[in-house]
Amino acid sequence: NAGVMQNPRHLVRRRGQEARLRCSPMKGHSHVYWYRQLPEEGLKFMVYLQKENIIDESGMPKERFSAEFPKEGPSILRIQQVVRGDSAAYFCASFKGGTGSYEQYFGPGTRLTVT
Amino acid sequence: AQSVTQPDIHITVSEGASLELRCNYSYGATPYLFWYVQSPGQGLQLLLKYFSGDTLVQGIKGFEAEFKRSQSSFNLRKPSVHWSDAAEYFCAALPTGTASKLTFGTGTRLQVTL
Image (cartoon, rainbow over all chains, first blue to last red; front, side, top):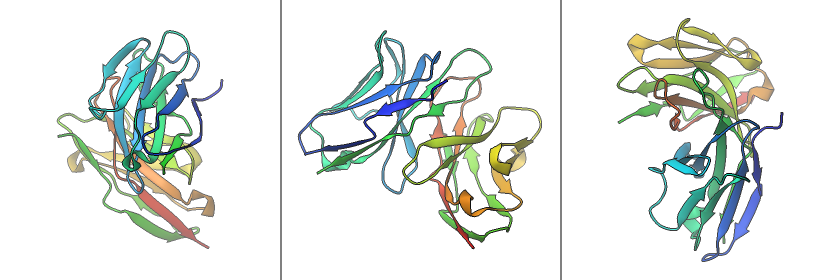
């Protein structure tokens, strides 16, 4: 059973460009979370999605950031008009759902560098 | 507000010595508790978790953690550290019975000297 997959692993963007980060959850997992880790900091929650639904986006910046988890395909975190402060590691985690199982499994992350 | 605190930013221990990493939480009700490890440039790997029951939890790689309700703590321990344990360790909490967001501590970076 493959783990959570994220691509690309490293992404370099110039200021003002768009960044698209992809996350494929573990097989059978229908819940996806995105977290951001700024340099020398812990992980901060951004958004929680189920298939075709945003459940909690309380950690998402109000502008330029969006996320989706379509019926088919990976979850996408999209950052428009990137700025230097967006440079961070972005981690996706997936969770199977159902009672008794609350473990979130993390992908290897996408390290975004904005130049 | 819900929070997780890891008071030690950086800890250095000698190989073979014992280890204890501290974690305190502040929640209205006892949350589910987790310890993750992150090697440089890598993702997070779950070491162990506490949901309920026995307050001493065994995990992978020889780690264990003890939940103490009276101290709102969930400290991670290992009797004998190996050089390969050098990494960043994160404590995290989840409101009980919810498929909600994890709240992480700021992490403790462990250095192991030979």
